[in-house]
Each structure stands twice: as C-alpha cells, then as structure tokens.
View 1: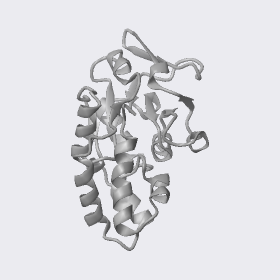
View 2: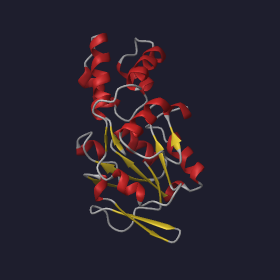
View 3: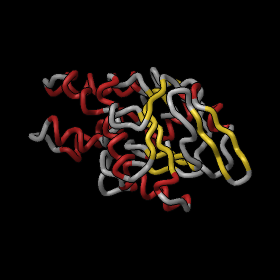
View 4: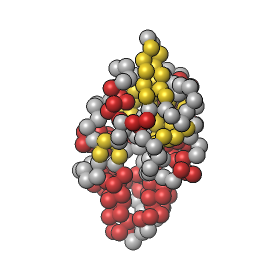
Amino acid sequence: MLVDSRHAIELVWHEWARRHGLDSAAILRVAHGRRTSETIREVAPQLDAAAEAAALDALEGVEERGIVEAPGARELLAGLPPAQWAVVTSGSPAVARLRLRVGRIPEPPLLITGADVRRGKPDPEGYLRAAAALGRAAAECVVFEDTPAGIAAGKAAGMTVLAVRGTYPDERLAAADAGVDSLAHVRCEVDGSYTHLRAPETKGELGWRVLV
C-alpha cells in the first residue's frame, strides 16, 4: 500500500451504486483490494460485469481527488535496493499508473495489475507472478497490504504479510502476520545482499525482497 486511494475509490463506487440503486456501504465492505469485475459479480450479479467494470475503470482512470502518498512510502522505497520490489494491484494498468503518479511514487521496477492475472485477489496469482519475476521464492517475500483480500492473497502465496491499518477495522486484518499504523514505522536496512525489514510490532526481521 504505497498510495492511499480510498477516497477516490469510494467516490467512484458511491456514484456507481447511486446509478444502480444499490447500497454503496455494502459494496465498499468488499470492494477495496479486489478487481472491479469480481466485486460487481458479487454485489450485483444481475448486471453485465464486464461492461460495468469497463465503465468503472474509465471513471477511476481519471479520478484524482483524494489520492495521496501513504505516509512513509517513498522513504521505505528509497531504502530498498534497486529492482528488489514490485507493485501488485487489482486495478487496471491505467488506474495503477495514475495513482502512482498522483501519489508521487516512483515507477516500480515491476508492476502486476488486474489485467495480468486470470484471477484477482484473494487469489495468490498476482503475488506469485511477481515473486517469480523477481527471482525469489515466495517464502522470501514480504507483502504490505491494507485489505482482507490482499492479506488473503499474500498468505495463500506463502509470503509474510504486514497489514497497514486504516482501510478496514483491525479484526478484518487479523490474518496478517503483523500490523503497523503506517509505513513510516517500517525500517529498511541493507546488509550486503540481505535486506532487513523491521517494524515496532514485529520481532526480528520480516524478509528480504518486498512486494507491495
């Protein structure tokens, strides 16, 4: 979670729900961290998921309101060795790049989007593809996530998952290995070929290559 795009996401879903006479609060309980089409199939199975997802992606691809850098994100990335991290997102390529740009996050060495996988989060496919591209075993990777779907995906991939609190109540993030209030609490130390990640709520190191 390098960019806080919650407000932008909620603006788009609220408008979409209003158009279709749906409960936006119920939608947002499951929407964060998941591919748009999969959320639509769950909350409105009577609609054409592909067509509705395309319309929503178009709206999200231009919505910049409320997009901000997650505190500590750039500092954390600056401490990582080059090409040692990836972004794995459920958004489309256009939406992902817009949010990274508006959030002032540098271009990731590897970007896996919802368009690159057959199954979105909570399926682990995106994280496993990223680990393979980085040349690391899943057990060597650390995932930063702020949604239940993302946490489930990281755990299913066999990775260490650090929850970033704020998007969902703590009880919905309980499956993570540990949690922090902010990425600003995570410290990165490089020792030769080994990257140590530490946070106050965790004991010892978290891992060496990072997927976010």
